[in-house]
Image (cartoon, rainbow, N blue to C red; front, top):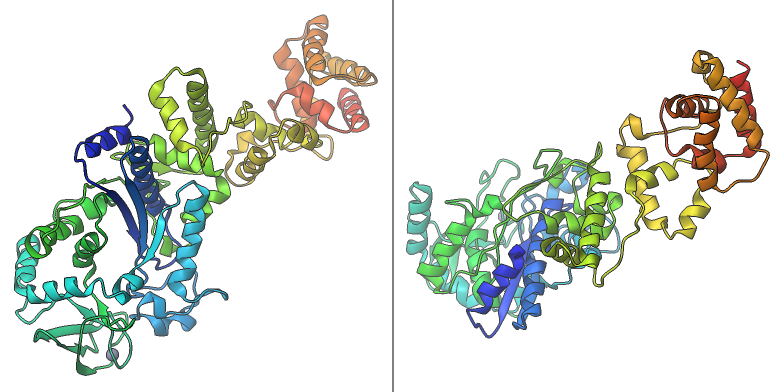
Length: 508
Ligand SMILES: [Zn+2]
């Protein structure tokens, strides 16, 4: 049985009145494709639950209140450096038309996941705080600060100072959150300092003050440290299913801490966890702050949505996805996708059929039957646009073009030579004779299928091996020994051009 169906069956046995599936992300820049894996994993759980008639809900929380703690390389340092340490919703958007920085990057990411068929209800952390719903959790965490200190000490084996409190206020003087430290809690107010040298990447203002940690009339005073907040958020929303990437799920990791907060501080059952392995690009867990090439939105530039979804659905969640767009990984993925479609429509391999079904974007769509590698040849031939259009292959053809231009190995790239290649002088007498014959035959009109058959026949008549015959064609046109189907490539070109080229080659 496909893994998510087993999970859903297990969950159904709990008979909860509602299964609340949740995932989350801090929109601190272009979001890495690895986070998309989380969206898909949770989407699958949600959909599998619905199929079993379990009442379920799926939300996605953007932690837009987290601090800006580093600058992505693609942003101008001089413009954004001054915002380091501020909560992301207080940082201006790098692009006009968005209320703030967090909204801009969150919306970019939302655009990607809705294109791959994930439609969770979107929540913003600032709204959770502003609504006042977090207030009771903030209170209990501050009241039980000594217990939380103990949890940190047990888990991380290091001493936590007695006057450390689990709350990060927004400095009432400079607005920063990365620099503040609470040193007292009297049951109503916290006392804090905005420490000048709290972190190395930005300076605090030195302000010292008191404030209520609670949200009041839509205001927002600060936030819980995120691992504690993770647990608090589970309780506030009523989350029953939520996992995270393997970095958070490791022993002693953030999930362990959040779980202990659930048990010992806020009294809430730990949600069913769906841990999933990394999504690597070319073997590396590149962070999206390092620049182009690994963000979720960039993946959609090189793969159609259903293929990107398929890549994540087909891989076991415990297994890393290692995607490298160069070489033949992309054509192989298309082949696998077609195989899964065959399994679905022929009702043969049930697991594979289920993978295909769950990879669909909103409704089942039969993929083209042409192999991607063949399509990659077609898009390199002139005058093939009509055939591509006729067969309804425009969408896949556009991805084939991108693959050929950016990622295909040299052996898969073919270029019609503008002038007669030097290498034709190595053609044998028989090969030259063959080219003259083909050139003559081009005076008639042909269907590519018939023409292709005759290319073999004419070689036979001249007692020329088909390998030598075809390489004569490829050398004259492409300056290569091999190439895409010769009959099609010849007929796709201007007739007079090919006739002249073959005669020139024959007479060289
Ligand atoms: Zn300050």
